[in-house]
Length: 160
Image (cartoon, rainbow, N blue to C red; front, top):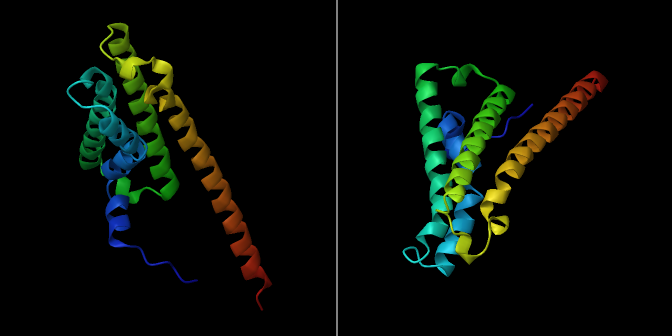
């Protein structure tokens, strides 16, 4: 069976849980932040942009923690793809819980303004659904892998 050649950036990401965690965290946050920065000047709407800064800051801290943990306990290289996914999903879940907690504390002290609206229209409403999304992606990925293995096994058994 031929394997698909891996690109250099995929190899780099596979060996670094910090980069994968950052990609999981920021692929959906940075584009929305860029749109809000384009629409609302940073200095004038700093208290509204604070939510994004909290999310990005905690994502960076979590990635740094994952990097330190990987350096102290080099289990990442020996882990299979699903174990890696479970560790990333767990780290992402913890990250989102911490982000939500800090955001709620800042909101309780009225330090976040939400661009003149309320919290219902902010990215904070996507913290928990993003965790659920990654767990659903993991379950679907596991099913697809099992189906693939089933068909590969049945294909080999039909060969002469």
